[in-house]
Each structure stands twice: as C-alpha cells, then as structure tokens.
Amino acid sequence: MILFAGIAVLALLLVPASSGASGAAGVRAQTAGGSTAQQSQQERGRELYLQSCAACHGPDPNGPSEYSTVPSLRDVGGAAAVARGKPRFNEQDTRALAAYVGASVGDALIPEVDQNKGNVVEGRALYAAACAACHGMNGAGSALGGENIAPSMLGVNQEDVAEAIKIGPVQMPPGGGLPNYTPTDSQSIERVNDVAAYVEALNKDRFNRGGAPIGGKGPVPEGFVAWVIGLGLLILGIRWLGTRS
Image (cartoon, rainbow, N blue to C red; front, side, top):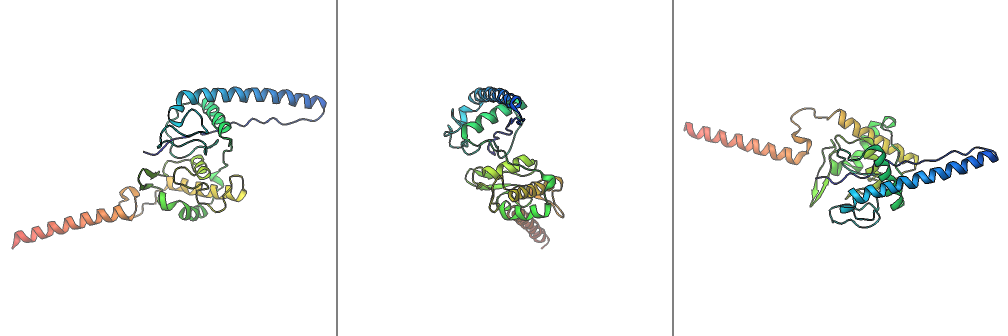
C-alpha cells in the first residue's frame, strides 16, 4: 500500500538568442511561440488534472488533498516521488501534467541524477547513514508504524531516487537525510548519483549470501522464524523421546 506516483517529467523549453537586430526579432518571435506552446501545454495539463487527479488530490494542486491519506502536491513541484505503477498517460500528457503542477505550486525543478557517474562505495555509506534505518540496508523496505511504510528500493529507478530525496515524501525529510542537500549544488548532485548507484547495485545483486533471505526484512523476522523452527524441532524431539520411555 505504498502511496502514489506523482509527476515524472517537466519540459523546459528555452530558446537560445542570436546576435543582431534581425536575430533579436527572431528571438522575440520564437519566445512568443514558446510561451503560446507552454500555455497550451499547461492548459492540457490542467484538463488532465481535473479529470484524473483532482478527485483525490483536490481541485487545486497547491491546496489540500481531499483525503488525509492522499499527499498534497504543494511540496512536490516538477518532481515526483515513491513507488510508480504503470503509467496511465502517454509521454506528451505526462509532460503536460508536469508543466501544470509545477507551475501551480511554483517549483518546476527536476533534480539531476546520473547513476553511471556515482560511486557505489560512497553511495553505500550515504545510504547506510540516511536511508537504511527505514528502507533497510538491502532495500527491502519496512513498516514504520501506523499507516507509514518505507517502500522497497528494489525495482526503483534513478529518477525515483533523486525525486524522493528532493521532496522528502511522507515521513522522509526533504533532502533524504543527506548532509547540506541542495538540488542544484554540485556536491549534492554527486551524492545523489552515489546513492542512485548503490540502489542500482541492490537491484543487480540482492546480496543474499548464505542462508535464506526470508524477504530480506532483517533480524527481527529472521529471529522469529528461527525461534519458531528451533522450538518446533525441540518440541518434536521431546515428544519423540517421550514415546521411547
């Protein structure tokens, strides 16, 4: 029951300027055309939002949601968070929704991420310090109490990682616990790349060396299973000895 997919991609259309009077006139014409295209895109996004999203998230993306269990989009901006399902919209409509919501809440920034530039060792250390307490060191996820659940990191792509770190969905703090996180800071981008690289490594190698992983949920369920099996075998042994006396 892990919450909701949000808005995935934002199209930012910027036109380079050229020199000279004729170039300036061309830039003005292109800018006007770009503004018209962006306005049309946002209108399409608003139409889609009202049709498919407003019933739960509320008619205004910058306002409260209709239900307490549905997250408001006011702190989301152009980024999205948490688990994603199969998209209901094509790429064009997704961009339109992103443009509308990003403009509505005043935050169109999508964080940069490239896991191929990340350092898995550094990412493991950052993940252990900032993420493992809730998501588990092996990314299996866990219940946090009440209705709060830390989702599994298995099957999560790099965009999900970067967006979740930026937003801080549900109980997760903005910045994901990374030190001095700022979405546009080069050091923060490097750290996000490192974490994304480690999460990608989790998806390639589940690190279940030795024994049964039992869902990878950690020592508590593993200990519980061990006690059940151990006590069960002990009781069977006692009963067997009792039948021999």
